[in-house]
Amino acid sequence: MTNSAPPVADVKTPTEPHSIQIDRLPWGDPTGAQLRCEQRAELAIRYGVDDPEPGVKPTADDIAVFLVASIDGKAIACGALRKLDGEAAEAGDAEIKRMFVRSPKRGSGAATAVIRALEDEARSRGWMRLVLETGTAQPDAIRFYEREGYERIENFGHYRGHATSLCFGRTLA
Image: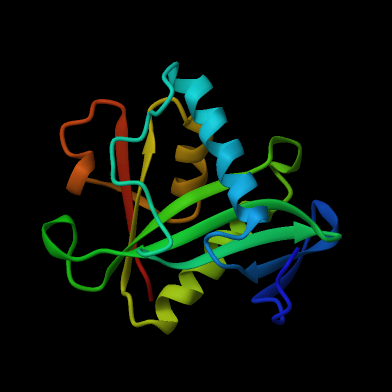
């Protein structure tokens, strides 16, 4: 990991003997870029197309925070927040982007640690609702978001009219 700042969070989970460290990294950091590349490759396989994302791809210019989870210094998961404005969102909305856990570490608690850290980041910025898009070929992601309190919402923004897109949202307390 190339980040020298103190971790955002250090979480012990019952299923993982080591703690999961959450770090804030720049969008362009090679560790995060590799995780995002793995995520895109997995989605291409699941959907059978090179680029299944119907929305605007996140960039360094529009990602407010990018988090990477690691165990023993090895990156295993990531997630990001993008502030939404205009017709795609209500005031105070942010979009969760690039949630991903490497396959061997699924079930380790890393996804929960990342999403909770993203929610904390959103609260600290005064963002009151998080929204996200996942897809019909990702039943594991759907179950995860529902378990974490996210509810199905009408498809928003660029996801409107896409048959494989499913959108979720959660108002933060």
